[in-house]
Length: 138
Image (cartoon, rainbow, N blue to C red; front, side):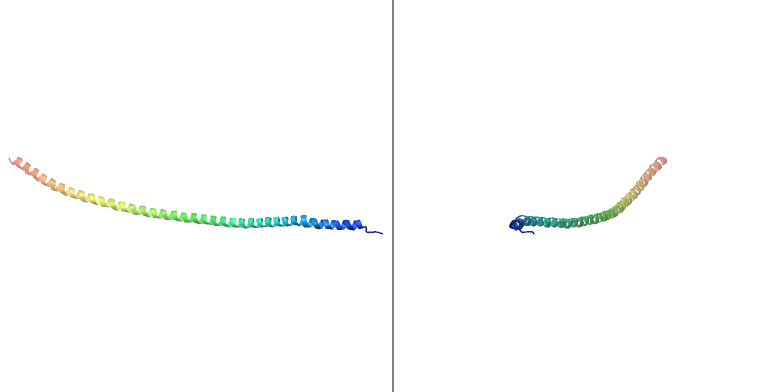
């Protein structure tokens, strides 16, 4: 029959005591450190995912703002072009009016000179006619 030897019981108890001591002094601290490390890793992965989402949202906002800024600058450019064309037309009209005024003034001056020259020519022709008449009659 099988007899239980005191040595077997003692070895059994020592093995359990060793397992208990190793668990308390070695395995549990290692498990605790590994759990802590795994929690940190998971936390970092979660924060990484969150930061990545925030990055993508920020990137989308920046792209949207850039698109709006481009549209706004295009609109501003078109407004400046229209204003420049209006200013050009106004300046051309102003220059045309000034030129017409100068032409009118030149016409008036020429008419005045023409009238003066006619008077002068008339008086000179009368003087010349008198001189010719005197020479012919004498």
